[in-house]
Image (cartoon, rainbow, N blue to C red):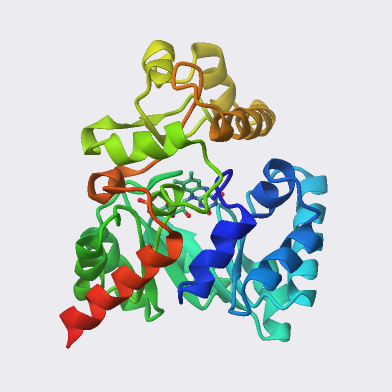
Length: 307
Ligand SMILES: Cc1cc2nc3c(=O)[nH]c(=O)nc-3n(C[C@H](O)[C@H](O)[C@H](O)COP(=O)(O)O)c2cc1C
């Protein structure tokens, strides 16, 4: 998660038996680590496998080159699981498969899954309408119905805050779950206490989608700041986001601005001036606790349900 995944959180999830996922921009720009050194820090905290998220939206050439370098370093440091999102994952698959790497691709509908499969991905992560971050438009049930016939493992992303939610997703037929919001409200996450407390206090109705952060809908807590600004992109931005030539330019502006806004919002106790990303899974999150306890609690609930 950008900006919430600090090395201690990633390591704690993996150490407990989950698969912590490194977000490179979060690791470097927000948490201040050189990418390779950050991975080595995680390695000192756990010997278990970790993954890496590659946001591969077609933007600038320099971003693409940087992502290629990050993937190369991750492979050298022993990472073998990659989660791609937002673009065509083919080049990532071509880069990591020869090294024994596995790529799972975030999708919100079948057509993106088919593109990913053409590109050689080995699993799909179904991002549903309850997810934190860039939410999808479909329910967990509808997405599974669309994606299961494609024959790859399908992981559920969105709406899983409690062990009951987790068990429900696996019972539905999902192969696993990708959690974001639940892990912000943990002891290891470096988010401010106010942000964590807001996740614990929030119910489903407190989550809204705003276009003002990145130009496309992102799930956030409806803080006084969000209420004051509204959730729609302004008229000029909207026109530029539609234009063929101006669209990439506008997206880049949004992306850079949101990186800065979210970094600032992570550490400050200022609900009147910040964006706090969270999904509808807030409904099942009742306390701040160690990330390892969450993983173990969820795993034992599934073991008990499956017994
Ligand atoms: C604060 C936050 C940041 C996120 N950042 C990313 C990201 O950088 N890359 C990505 O692929 N998904 C990102 N996501 C989406 C998560 O990977 C995951 O799909 C989603 O959180 C699942 O929904 P949940 O929050 O209800 O668990 C983010 C989610 C949150 C809440």
